[in-house]
Length: 77
Image (cartoon, rainbow, N blue to C red; front, top):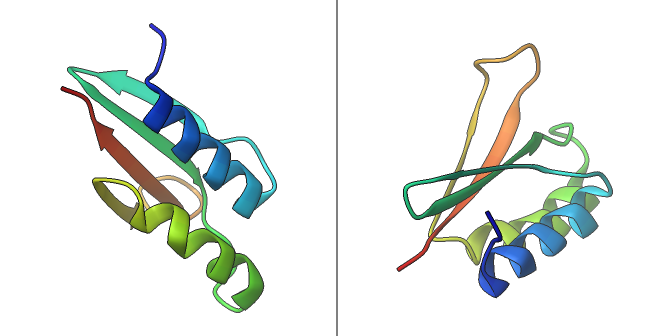
């Protein structure tokens, strides 16, 4: 399923800030991107990442996997 321009822009912003690919998940009109969280002391990456996260409808973090992750979500329609 293709993603919207807004979701594509978020994906690009996240990947630029993190300098690595993010993993998309598209379900029921929502597009969520997951990525490994930067190290807590990596201030430069966090400063680049925060505007990208803030542009999402919802964002947060989780540690349900082996490494802490950040996620950002766009609601379509």
